[in-house]
Length: 176
Length: 145
Image 1 (cartoon, chains in turn cyan, blue):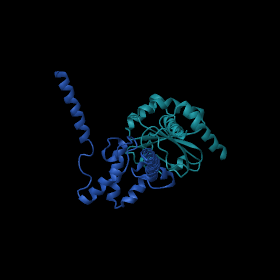
Image 2 (cartoon, helix red, strand yellow):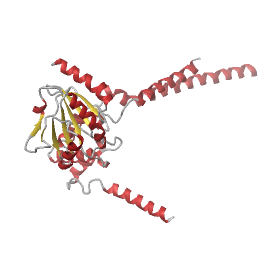
Image 3 (cartoon, chains in turn orange, brown):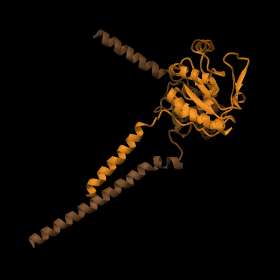
Image 4 (cartoon, chains in turn cyan, yellow):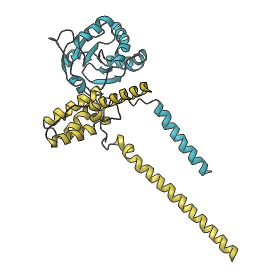
């Protein structure tokens, strides 16, 4: 009896592992910053290089930091969702324009709408490197005190917004 | 035929371009520093293209990290400090050899676990088979006797 049960059991365990594997996303690597203070940064703003954008601007309320670029195809797909979030007024979105060209980025916001409370211009990607960004789009959810609460890799879709971000944002806002 | 040859040639051009694209010149002139640079960039995973180390990836993040490693070496950081720097930002997964921690016990111990299971199975099979042979011997003895 055992000699038949053992292979079946081994097979069942393998199927379990493979089934789990179907729903894992190896391309999305958890951020080591979740639960810790966001890395400090200071960038010139996209619209006005004389002005700065830093952690201080994000303090005081729960906010999103969205990494985007005009060379990033998926960012174009994500943009309408960002516009909707901005319109809803649930949470301010700060932009981090990654390794881009200023005129292109400005034109992008003119054409597609500007959902950002403010956008920092990270021309050489140094700040993004400090934040552990390895692609675009990536979005950090940052608490009012500057703690990173969550990181979403890949575009924000309506589903992602409803299921991953909004509940966390509401939970964080209700704690204040 | 000619079209195919031309296509082949174009393909080869593509490959040669991508081979040459990783930094056109060595990071350091000092061979000792260059050796450290080579070793570290082989040790750090490119998260954009996960089965390549940053040493031979064309992804933007890999180039940025190569530059960062170069800067940190030039700034006199030790290898461990540099690896800690990337791990602090990108997590253990960025290392090809993640640290031995409770989360990675199964990862590091898995092969040995399977080795032990295999050995146990092998021993039990050999043990059973050897008893079978004994039985047959006894039978033969009985028959001949």
